[in-house]
Image (cartoon, rainbow, N blue to C red; front, side, top):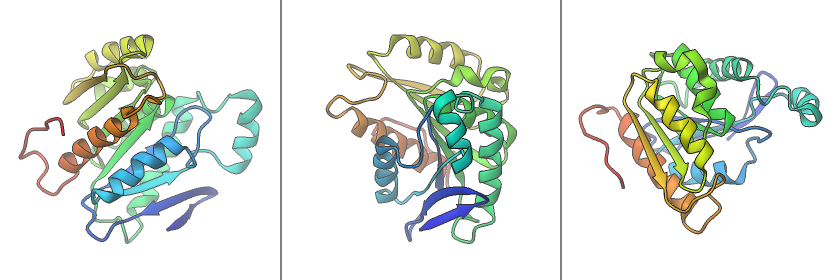
Length: 218
């Protein structure tokens, strides 16, 4: 279903048997049209999870950001926008009773963690794909949502940043490294593994029985 939060374009997909809803926080310069995030969203939908693919920037802001890049790295701005989107989502009848998770990619992961720290009672899980959790800064120690960080084995700098960031977090946290995968997970089977890992994490953490079972690799 096409949706329009104030001045923001998005797509809310809610399967009839939805057990939770995942909001996507796109990475630097990306949007709801990201083929990688749309692939993951489709896997989540097939696994009975609702998804909200929504632009974090308005059309006007995208025009400003395209040549300058000044907004795509403004983590506090993006986190505030994500908080507003989450509060809007809670008012939608299709998702009002569903637990919410964040899926953040690249810089979007930093924004997702800051927003999760601001909404500890609303956000029940976070997944980072090739993310920059270090950009969440001092908010890291305030995150209570269980967090899964997925990083490619051939992305050493981001892997190091993830290890350092997760060491600062006090919540349930898991770092999963996909051997041979690069930053964009373009290798055969890499993005499929990301989607399976994300689905397993969200399916457990967002279910009504969350907390009763230990997470394991699918």
